[in-house]
Image 1: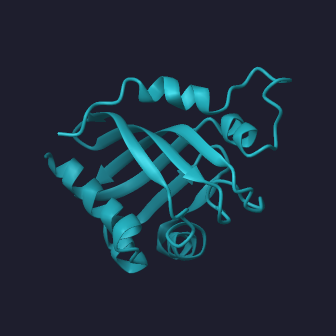
Image 2: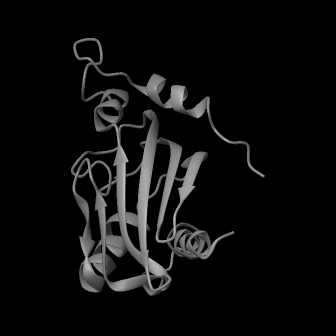
Length: 165
């Protein structure tokens, strides 16, 4: 495991396993930024990120949320993960679906997470996903009337998932 991968693993553990806002922030440089690109949620700097992580992300995760790793590309100061995230929309997700009440519908979506590092810590996260696909799966868009797909697009990506080692 490279130092970039170790730094990312520590960050993900703090935010998603131990659910510790301050520990999550400690894995990041002071001027770090997070941008969930399709909906522009996240923040810049410790104060905004503390609010984001404590109010909109760490404690706003579906209980059945899972990720299937597809691929990883690692550079000296950048890491890119491709994964398929699956969950039941059973709780409010202000980080992904701001202002949308839970629909209790199942969602599977391919995601791409681009992470930059500086001084051994996370400097930025840019997270991308097909938001139209998510909106179709929760019933807010009619995939029959638009050139978008629902879970089928995530299933196509998941076919190329790398088996866990």
